[in-house]
Image (cartoon, rainbow, N blue to C red; front, side):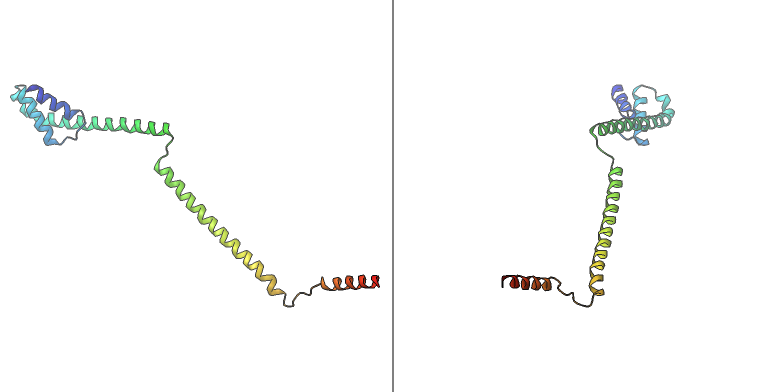
Length: 145
């Protein structure tokens, strides 16, 4: 029976389970009753507070150890934090927006350049190549004759 009470105390104090004050008081009462220290029942509240504090401290230490080990493993594997991925995603979106704006501006400039020469030249262009070709053909005919 003493071992059961002691086992409950150790389990609560180890920090592997979350301890409520009532659970701690129950464990402390059981421990004191099993040891035959009924005269010390006034210390039950103090002992329960101690169990809760020890449990919380041990749980925090265990969480810190696990978090440290996980971070080390993640770093060795070359993974990145989600904050870094989110920052890079925002940067890529900003660059995509900037690129789309640059393409739109370039398209507008190209369209403006194509329409500007056509609007400034109202008269149709005379084909200059036809006259010299006719003259060259006339000269060949004259030489043959």
